[in-house]
Length: 231
Image (cartoon, rainbow, N blue to C red; front, side):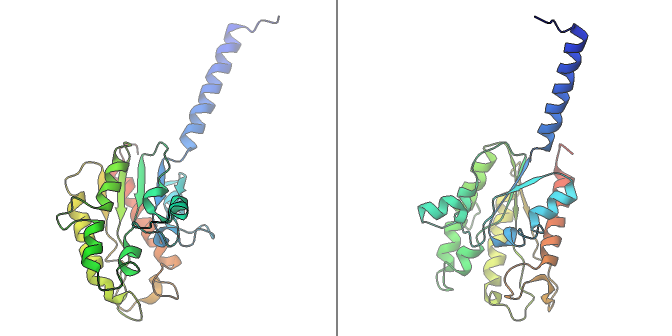
């Protein structure tokens, strides 16, 4: 049997350790979840998560799904990601960046049951509901949880213009929930769209344009850069 000299063995061990450490640093530590605001433009590599990855120069794993909601009930498609809470499938994450609730309010309440739907998402005191429960579960993994608000209508030609009050109320409750809770963050983008500026939305005036995804990704990555203890 051929013996390996101790210096060669130690050199090989150190080299293998360095390679393993480098590989682990390339593993994603940021998870993205949510609905079409996060998932739009993924095919072209210009979704919010793609922008965050480029800005922070590290990979981001994206489980967001177009059309997803907090209240989606069908089991199989819900498990595939149409239920936002089911988009978390384990892993070691330093940050979970997500959004949600818009489809529940716009599509789920039919503009006549929004108060009940809002309470089911997050209560008026910002303590209970589907969103706080999900955030608490994510925080239980040790991850920092960053909830991202929604784009606002530019005030012209948008079918969600009448939902602006609900959007404001949802984000006010989210802000109250995040305030004073260690490891829970809320980033609003309510001020991103100037009045009358249609360039932040797609043709449907609902989903984000490429410009909007880039702006949202920039705001998220700047926030993480400022608040990430590992950077």
